[in-house]
Structures are given as C-alpha cells and as structure tokens.
Amino acid sequence: MKFYVDIADLDQIKAVAEYFPIDGITTNPKILAKSPQPIEELMVEFKKLAEENDWEVFFQVTCEKAEDMLQQAIKLHDYYGKHLIVKIPCTKEGYKATQLIKAKGIKVCVTTIHSVMQAVLAAKAGADYVAPYINHFDNYGVDGSDCVASMLTAFVDGGHDCQVLGASLKNVLQIQRLAEVGCQAVTITPDMFDTLIAHTSTDSAMESFKQAWEAKFQDKQLSDFIPR
Image 1 (cartoon, helix red, strand yellow):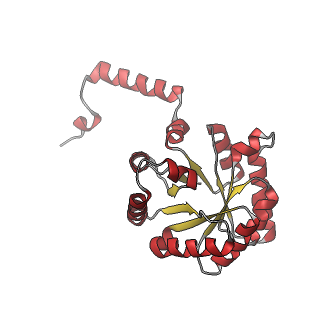
Image 2 (cartoon, rainbow, N blue to C red):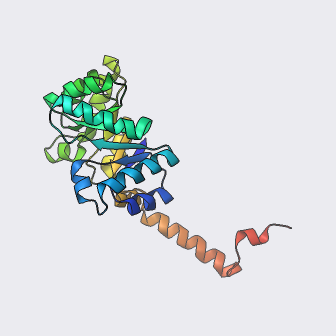
Image 3 (cartoon, rainbow, N blue to C red):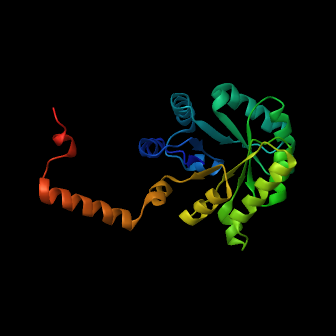
C-alpha cells in the first residue's frame, strides 16, 4: 500500500518523511488555501522533494470546463513532469477532461468519488487513480471499504488499469479495512501516521526491556559488548 501525506505544510511533510516511508504528497484547493506558505514557494519546494525522493505530487485543477482543465494539467505537467498526478473532479466536465488529459500522456486521479459507478466510469475514461472519500461513505451508512472492494473487482473484471487512493480517512480501522481489501494507496494527515503505529502494549513491552537492561547494565549499550 502506498502512503501519501495530505497537507501543504512543508515542515510537517518533512517531519513525516523523516520517520515514515511515504510515497508523495496530495493536495486540493482547500488544503492549498489553508497553507501557511505562499503557493509559489510550495510549487518550487514540492518539485525539489518529488525529484529528490522520487515522489508523486497531486494537484487538483481549479477550473470547471474540460478544455480549461486540460490546459492547466499541461502546464502542471510541464513543470513537474513524471512526478505529477493531476486531480480531476468527478463531474461531467471532469470525465471529458480525464480523456483529454490522458490522451496527452498525463496521469490522472479522479477525485471526490462517492459511488462505485463514479469510480468505474473514471477508470474506463482512463484514470490512473480514483479517490473515494471513505469517511463520507461511512457517514451515510455505507461501508467505505466494501465499496472499495467492489471498485477493485469491477476494475479487474473490466480490464481497467486503475488504482484506488483512499481519501478522507479519520481512524486506523478505516485504513486497516482498506489494506485488507487490497486498496493500493491512502492519503492521510500527518498526525494519522503516528496513530497508525501507536499501541499501549508496544509501549509497555519497550519499557520492560529498558528496565531489565538498565537494572543489570546501567547506562551501557549493546554495542559496548561487541568484542574488539
């Protein structure tokens, strides 16, 4: 499973990447509008990070007509090259834009997916990724992971080379369920990475190891006992 960090704060992105094996950065217009850094600076820094780490960066178009989406995608691709995944909204114009953009060899993620059939049509239009909003499914009483499983089955049956990027995730169980059904990627906020590995039993075990070691060897470390 690929893991992307869903934020446009450079300090937080670097802090997550220092500890966790992430595959890139996802953004949307709302995230960029909340960013503490000017977008012009982010554009440059994201390019550096993508090239240095071989990451994918996701930017969502901000126009509504297919032809305008195409032109924006081309400009973004000219700057980011192979690292760009352009996010296209799940609208009528978006489906048209997806086909136009894919014809130019640019990777597409169709976003704001809220049903299986939206995802299937996006895959048939050529999308490389679809981004279902899992918490939105769950909030409406529909199991988001079951819907993702149905999407994946439909993609295989239809011969579509499309991956699912789970988005709008609020808890560990949602992410675990996606992993269990074979979802290829998720995008989560920085704090969620710490939550994924947090467990009181792990903390307790580590504390018992520490106490046992220090009781006998005080401040020495294992490497101190390697024969010279």
